[in-house]
Image (cartoon, rainbow, N blue to C red; front, side):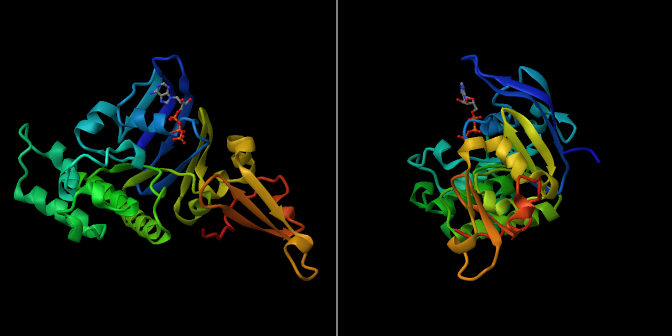
Length: 294
Ligand SMILES: Nc1ncnc2c1ncn2[C@@H]1O[C@H](COP(=O)(O)OP(=O)(O)OP(=O)(O)O)[C@@H](O)[C@H]1O
């Protein structure tokens, strides 16, 4: 199957000489939700920027649905849901206008929306439960509502590859669940979602694939075999809080099982160990036994 994203030996260097990404390679197919995981400054946003054509790799090659990035962007194949900090929320723009921006690539030079564009915008807003807010200023919405509006923009665009930069930051658990449910629907429609997140605890819940980076790709592949304590340790080192509980600190009885909590800065990953935590003792155990809520 042709990959939706193929990143081959990509190096990205900024004009100040910083090499933010070096020799990164991974490939992802359609109908996938993939987490992009790494410490602050590991190159996640830079990777997104190169997939969006904002920065050009100094070396290597990126293909999106078999096309050069520029061609894929021209065809509206890549949609982007930005981090909250990247948006000027004081800019006076209505919710429906933000979503209409997703239709620009489908319009002529003068960008005059047709009825079909308006219908698509309405459908996208309905899909994220934001239709009643269509005439509100974007700056008047909550963090979770804003996220949903930008998701609607991606839907209206019809992108086959959707890049989500920290979609869960600043949203409540209910909104997070809605976003995850929507991503699952989009996966069933054959779209690829690449999700940058510090929410380690929710990754095994909804991501089929994981790409772990620290300037280069440290590991990439199915969640069950890639999202392992050993790989996380390599990626995060001391930046990850690693708390292990057992014995009298955890149990009122003679239960010897251990509990391991691995946390970046958002939802922690909780692992229930075997007796004495053997299953987790430095082994590359898959993290498929998590169950944590903030
Ligand atoms: N415009 C820029 N010019 C120069 N250096 C940059 C630029 N943007 C990012 N960098 C540097 O590139 C490296 C990677 O940054 P990047 O923003 O891609 O990391 P990140 O993984 O997205 O971090 P975070 O989790 O904090 O968002 C960092 O060392 C950063 O300082």
